[in-house]
Image (cartoon, rainbow, N blue to C red; front, top):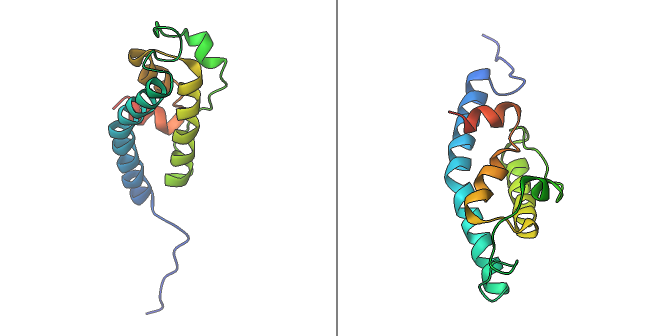
Length: 117
């Protein structure tokens, strides 16, 4: 019997990888937001960076040009997106209760279905 050649992971394997990434993203995003907030507060003398941190508007958050995340590209793409989101969250001055909601609003396609499960 001749060996079979595979061109890549099966749909089932892709689904399993996507599920794992989705679970890890749901677990780590709040921790990243907390860490970034703590770093900003420490750098700004504990005032949140905007004189008391009353938060930001969604329009203000979007003015920082955050990039959407579509769930493609695997771990490397996810890691790069998280790093960019840390900068956007830092620059936007959003309150703690806004950060995850605003970051999650950037999920599209597969990533959006991960978040909603």
